[in-house]
Image 1 (cartoon, one colour):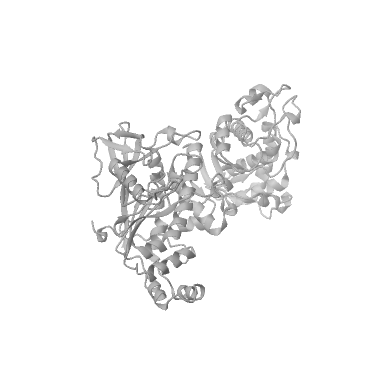
Image 2: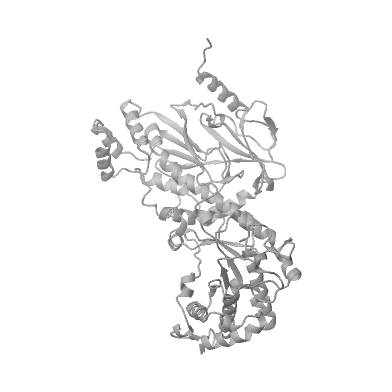
Amino acid sequence: MSCDYLINNKEMARQNGIVQPLLTDLYQITMAYAYWKSGKVDDTAVFDLFFRTNPFQGEFTIFAGLEECLKFLENFHYSDSDIEYLVQTLPPNIEPEFFEYLKDLTCKDIKLSAIEEGSVVFPRVPLLRVEGPLIITQLLETTLLTLVNFASLMATNAARYRMVAGKNVSLLEFGLRRAQGPDGGLSASKYSYIGGFDGTSNVLAGKMFNIPVKGTHAHSFVTSFSTLDDLHTAVLLHAETQKQCNLLELAVEWRRRLSAVIDVSPEEASDGELAALISYAQAFPSGFLALVDTYDVKRYNFQGLPSRHRQHTNGHSGYNSNCGSNGRRVRISTIRSTCGYSTVERTLRSGLLNFCAVALALNDCGYRAVGIRIDSGDLAYLSVLARDTFHQVAEKFQLPWFNHLTIVASNDINEETILSLHEQGHAIDCFGIGTHLVTCQRQPALGCVYKLVEINGQPRIKLSQDVGKVTIPGHKEAYRLFGADGHALIDLLQRSSEPAPEVGQKVLCRHPFQESKRAYVIPSKVEHLYKIYWKEGRICTFPKPLVEVRERVQSSLRTLRQDIKRNLNPTPYKVAVSDDLYTFIHELWLQNAPIGELS
């Protein structure tokens, strides 16, 4: 089908201003000059962009960054100032005609084929296949790599968080302040959303990519209030009657009444915190979600249990309390029945009392609070205590909706934290995740590479003593073969000249480098992985909107067996080559490998 029929009238989000031809390594330009000077202007090449190992000790990767690659191709052009800089920077012997050549260079002769963005992908299978004039395909290398590497790593990291959190817990990206610079922060927000997060705190990302933006307030907002006198007004109009309500008077009275219910004296609660929460509730009466751990008022001990036996593990141990003198560990779900407690733990004593007082005052004014955020302490334990408090209030005052207030947890959360919190038993509805997500602390780079596999129709192979670095030569197609149970079974690479595998027909699949590893597969479904996205200087297949890419991630992951996706010791997914491609690889290997000499 011609590209003319596939052009979509939608405009892609604007290109990042720093993504331009000079966002590259110097050696790409020096190679371009050497190619030009040696008469290779009309040579054609095929490059594959792929990775060798899945990140995060897992067995899958999510492909992302394709939309940005297409924007880059669409806008590729050396400006006058670019050319002027290169003239000043490159050695003086560079011929002026080369700069004229660069000035007229575009991607009109490039053909880019790719796997659909948001797809689950695997090592050695090319994510992008770039075809066209040698010089321009070489010049694209570094920029394409930087656009795909972090995007795919970030989307994969986010998808892993989504899997461990489960479907019923919301995930928010809170990482802008910890990201590697502004561009890293924007990219993290975009690709964490693709990977399965529900929103971001990054306002610019929300504007640019139409991602839901979420947020509450910081501890500084609470500590900026010292006493109730800091409230300049306490008036709030009733949601239905528009009658004036005095939120301060209502909250103070509710705090008095609540103290007996949750066994916290009003004298233990901070008036400055109450003033802050009232102020925030006035500003956002329909969206009141408050941070409740600003003040650590009074050490709480289990009855008869010295404070030295309390563990604050932040959810890392799998157990989070010692009960009794023998130090026996117990799960959070058994703490109440085994040890007994009569008061709210010290970190939340002030915050929970003040929040509940303001939430009930808002209820009197026709509004319903949203919930709380906990940003420190033992998250499993504190969330269970908070939920128990909400149940007590709901039962005491006949307010069923109070049972369902949202509990948000933040505080340096990673995959292991969430898994441990699940093991302990928690009452958290939403995780706000920052540093570990946006910096990909477990693995800071994916390691995509861009390798020449064909020049002027002749295949090329890179040899290495490390077999993992030997490239698979030539112009190839990739297919995903599905088993009888409907799950993806194997990815198959084969030469483009070969006929595509067919449903119900036996296919010999071989490990590319280990002769004895081979198997017949009779696929129940065959998916051709490549589409042409760029040809003849224009976009042929328009990238899907972000929300559809996000859905693609989850639907693609559902095609994998659970043992491939599990967090601990996942089963490797198989990538194979056809029998024809296997023979071709090894013949080319022998042709190019030097013959040693013994003496």
